[in-house]
Length: 220
Image 1 (spheres, rainbow, N blue to C red):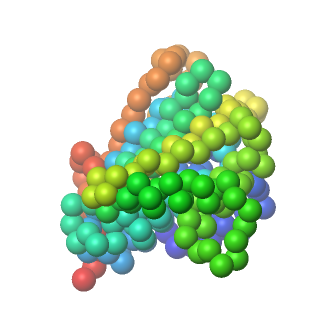
Image 2: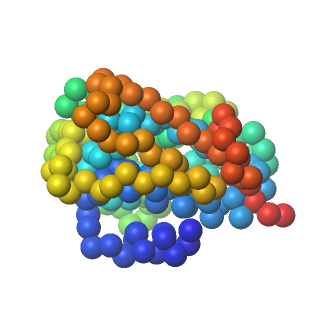
Image 3: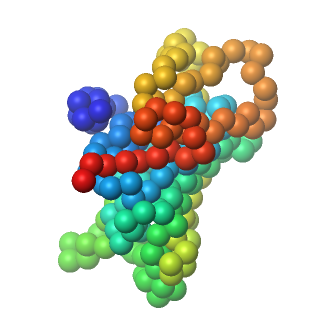
């Protein structure tokens, strides 16, 4: 998993298919289960029709890392991160949410304001979110947006909306099927697949058994 993270980080691309970004996040989560002590689970809700949508590289992993570092840092168990992606007409909507410590109304407003302010070298809070927001605007201008909602002890939700972009048909990667721990089994992409929202939720326990959530386990 670690070598795959390095390999992905070294690719000379600033735009990537969502499917590859999801792979990267799954590898990151796999590493976390060796570091943490069964502190949280990850639930995926991915619209299959969104998988080949092109997104800015490293758009999801920093959000998941934020959940772990800031939202669930006090949790020894019971944490939950939910990652969603759905196509709605000509837009892609991404969402990363946790059930962590959350923020007060004042902290949330300060964070929202900081996203739209010029860089401040003395201000360290929200740097990952600000970086994502800046890259989204470079990627799609006013067509991209990011919103943040949070409540104390109820968690934080980050939503990203950006114009829908799909690669040319000849650029699509072949479908992969695998049952390795932490790796999703992808559906075949064919002309017969359902239109609208064809949902697929896949999750694993640390033993590789399919379950209702992605169990992230670590060694003590």
